[in-house]
Amino acid sequence: MSPRIGLDADTIVEAAAGIADREGWEAVTLSALAAKLGVRSPSLYNHVNGLPELRSKLAVYGIGRFTAAIEEAVQGLSGEEAIHALANAYLDFARTHPGLYESTLRDQSDPVIQAAGRRIVELMVHVLQSFGLDEETGIHLVRGFRSLLHGFVSIDSKGGFGMPLHIQESIKLVLDTFMAGIKQLHSS
Image 1 (cartoon, rainbow, N blue to C red):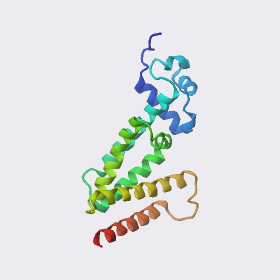
Image 2 (image 1 turned 180 degrees about the vertical axis):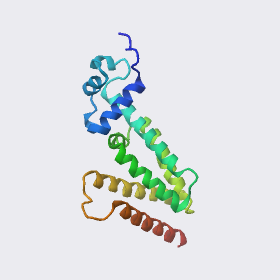
Image 3 (image 1 turned 90 degrees about the horizontal axis):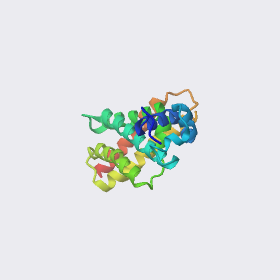
Image 4 (image 1 turned 60 degrees about the vertical axis):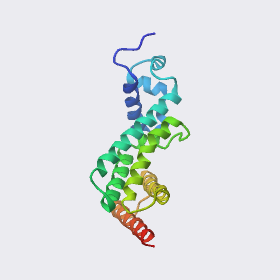
């Protein structure tokens, strides 16, 4: 069977991203994707080798979009300004693209996904190194920083911040406290 004109792997992944963002990661199925694209499910096999490969491609695509958003936000910045810009880009991406964000957290055992995700970690390490940290300490702090941001994303996405305080003020306060801790760590 020959591939349908106008249908290619990029079109398929972008359509899957749309489904993921609107309906959630679990809604990305071959039948849902075929319906969205107006084709029969078997037609997708000309471009992807089943749902696992589609989800792997979707994760790599999501990581690429996520990385680009962070790179753009921190370009030309350093120190505290870069930390705040990175955090805001992280949170904005997760809010705007919840399905793609979720895809970035999937199947970290896949070497292709690991390679794609490495750039995000490198960006975070680079931003934190402006505080004069050694590489090992920087990696520990990246883990904490990512956990902090993911925690905000997770709670916010479930409507868990119900108090009448602005979430952005909470994030700023927590980031300022995080950075004060880094400065303290560096000065000791």
